[in-house]
Amino acid sequence: MDVVMVEQPLLSTLNQLMSVLEEMKKLLNAPTRSYVRDSKAMASTPADVKDYPSSYVFVLDMPGLKSGDIRVQIEEDRRLKH
Image 1 (cartoon, rainbow, N blue to C red):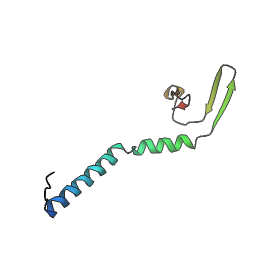
Image 2: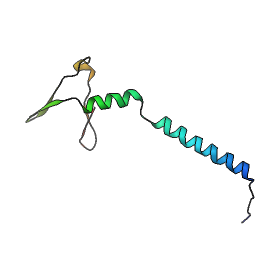
Image 3: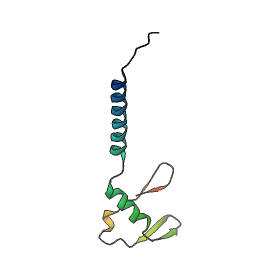
Image 4: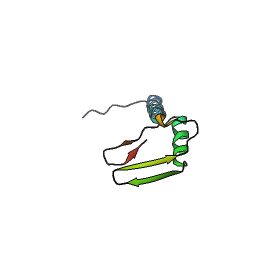
């Protein structure tokens, strides 16, 4: 196996480039401010849940939203997803 000698400035530059790429990846995958704000609002929104034999009814007070603006889905693991 051949050993390649790399000069210190080049190695340092490559290391910095890798760090920049990792930071960009973190920023691109980070949730948006509006998502974080909306998630916090949803988590702090009180809800009444009524359990009927064949359905659930959720009663929420969400100013500024109409009932048609809210979508509820069930994920594969049978948990509710908004």
